[in-house]
Amino acid sequence: MKNLSFIVFIFFLSFNCFSQDSIYQFNEYYINLKTLEKIQGISENAKTFKEQSKFATRFISPLWFESYPAIAVVNERKIELKNNELFFSGINDHTGKKDTSFKYSSSSEDFLLTFSKVFVRIKKMPNKLIYAVLINDENGQNIKYLKLTHTMRIEDENGVKESPFLGFYAHTTDNIVFTSYNKDYPLTHVIDVNTCEQATQDFAITGIIRSEDEKKVQGFVEQIKDGNYFKITMPEYSWETENLNKHHNEVETLLKDTIIIMATYSKIATGADLKAYHAKTGKLLWKADVAQLKAAHSQYYNKVHLSLFQNKIIMEGIEAGGTYLQIFDIKKGERLYTDGIETNN
Image (cartoon, rainbow, N blue to C red; front, side):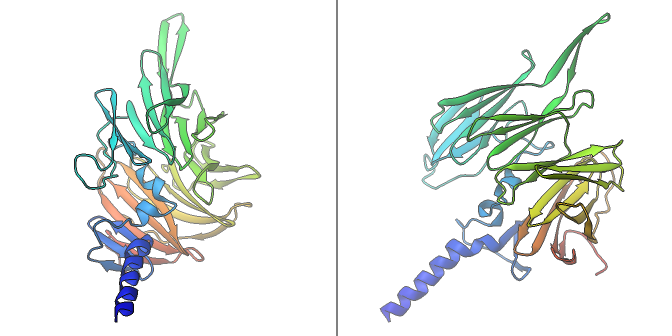
């Protein structure tokens, strides 16, 4: 009987420790990605798909329309940014309960990013016209200090004019990406936080292609030919695809074997498209039937998250007009699940 109880205990423990990678949180409830059924609740300390899958960084990368993280957690050390100062403590201090949550209370002028072995402070310095990018260990010891120019100062017969052009774009498990939002100064920087090396491209991007393990930036998406085409560039090949929705100026991608999944959308308007291409040739494999929100436009924002569970593409939209979750089959693009949007099927 004791052996049976022990087996039941181990099964229960295993379920709570390992099964949560198939549980996806959407709004106030959870979806079982294996069965596509809703779950009412999970154990309090369980980590879900968004927290423990290889796609976790996608969900914590700061969004341009939200506050930025003022807390980082590295090796059981919590680093807080308050009033231009850093404070260090253990993540169990004060509360007696482990808390690794990210607080979005900073601004894009000064914020923190968490990586596996380091944290990075990104501070915009208007007077010097640079971003200070400080790569630090868990104790705040500076490993590398990088400077990125964010504003060009141009002098002509009319005097001195300042032209801001560079902003933080996104980060992966190992990389930080900055890109230009001014067509007069096309530039993209990728920083590797492990080697502290910086690579620069002479174009601005509308999307990044992450490596299949999600760790590094493996390629880029540019908007070219007056926005009518997207150019996909990877180390061994590049190709172009027509942008049929001319207002789409942002691209989220997934790389799986020989397939690139691309969600295109506008950062300031509702809606999104989802397509699959052969990664090397750019051949269109399918276009998904994406359900669209019906939303009015006033100070609008839009962000699409893509992730993958087995052969299911997970597409979560965060719009000013509402949020939605849609799940598609990777082979044919068939929509398998929809939530947050009224549909006819």
